[in-house]
Length: 155
Image (cartoon, rainbow, N blue to C red; front, side, top):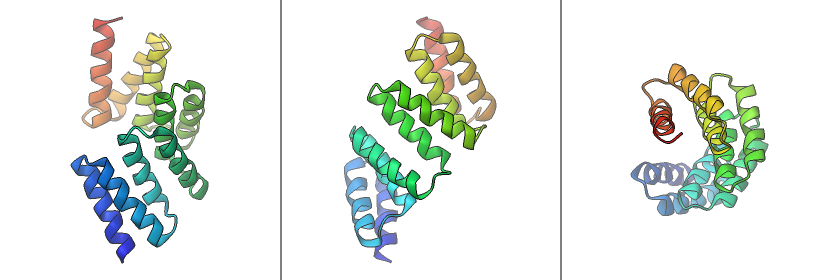
């Protein structure tokens, strides 16, 4: 029960935008309850919020060892790799995510971000347009819309 409470507290802190407290609560939950995929993924979000990308990758890798079918964990790890300027490993994770979930808007959004960094503007636009078809009113759709507008302003 304590594990669940710490896990819930960690998620609440994430929603409140306090990554440090989220990390602490989720670390306590993991220490008490053993490795649980959801807790590892949530703690990776907290670590990324603290810009501790290598540590986030470690948690996501462990979560994927436990549950290799979690497309969102591959997308999150790809984002961490992008922040560390390792676009090749990010590409690998996005390919895995899209193989598991071909309609994953977040994977298309991230792949578009990487393509834009490489100067592949037409390919980035195609990915972001796919996001708009898949998630027009959600956060991924809004991010894709902003990315397209920015690209149109600064080609």
